[in-house]
Length: 125
Image (tube, rainbow, N blue to C red):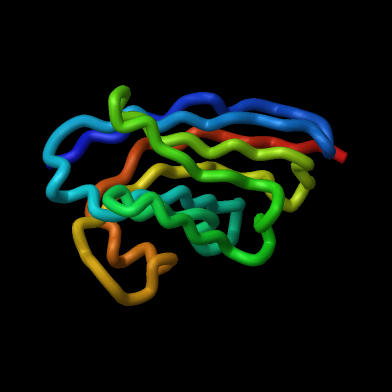
């Protein structure tokens, strides 16, 4: 089992910055990959950033490249998402997720077995 608890969301103006945190506990065997997803009202959940916990390799969806940075602090068992130059279209509930599956579509929600409760990010124009 893996438990994930997000924090750090809030309301900012366009161009602003936020850092999300995800405190993880439980089996590291189930955390080969960790990711941040977001979901806007009326839209499907979208993967935005993924990290391979073993190699540290990171992957981003095109819409956030150059603006979002995913990172991990293994000593603190914490996942981060640093977001700069935020846009109104970045608004949504942000979720931390963990997967033990290796390979395949890293941004597919179905591969992630464990999810946090989410933290809201609102970007106003």
